[in-house]
Amino acid sequence: MKFKILICLLLTAGALSAQNGLEGLWTGSIIDKSTGETLPVELYLTLEKGYIKGMSYIHVTKDSVVTQELVGKMYQDRSIYMREVTDREYSIDNLNPEILEGGKYVRKYQFEFKRSIWESSLNGFWQEITPTPFSVERKLGQIKLERKKSGDSSRV
Image 1 (cartoon, one colour):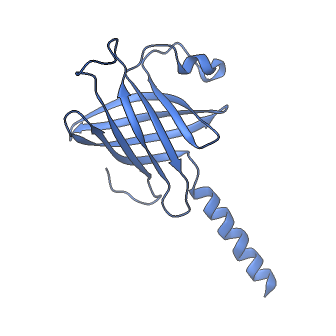
Image 2 (image 1 turned 90 degrees about the horizontal axis):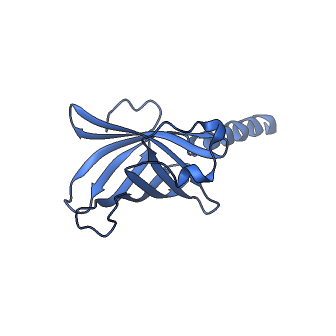
């Protein structure tokens, strides 16, 4: 009897730890504060050499998706800084903290990673990077994501 309980506990612990990490597909919405427009978004994230890499897919219309490569880092308080990468001048082998600040990119993101066995979430803010940061045309807003459950075949 004790052996069966031990096996159940080990299996449950393994299943729970596999579900609450950062890697994988995240779905939700991105909100433009200036227009109030809400668009479906997906992020696919992986961890490599202490950094976060990924792709963002913003569904502008049913037939139009804006895709960007992302790179970033998670800090000890589970806050995450990520930015879009538009140049191909880096590789994961020579990735260092300077790449998080350099290069050309359109948006940067700041997330709070809430890890849970039921509903993990990435919630935060994004802002457009422009030469005139105080311009009224500069876009910024919120982004809210939840982990896509395995076996859920529905789109955003």
